[in-house]
Image (cartoon, rainbow, N blue to C red; front, top):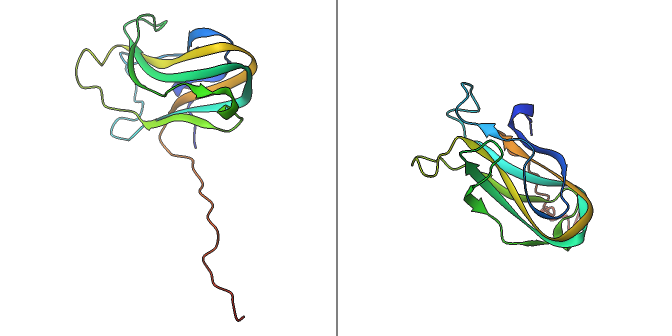
Length: 147
């Protein structure tokens, strides 16, 4: 996966308590190419395990404000239990939907983290990428009996 610093929404961002937003936003009104014609994917990856809290709900949001206040939720996960928030786990890995209507398409996009309980440690990284990183390892189907 190739990451573009300008497409990172959270870069090893610590999550502790309450509802917080990604430290960075993407301004859709600025004149730049963020992958036009390509299928962008949103990813949220746990970098350091989140411990001490109960759960986190991850949401891809859009807002008229750079601080993401008054966000509109595009897509979100159910609350993910703390036991599942281990290093390397990914949440809300989705293809970024085309926001064609003006109520859905606001100027800024980012991520909202709704935290239940209080996490004492743990960080996440979120952003947009063009290429999917994924590796599925399956057992060999080669029959070696009789060799």
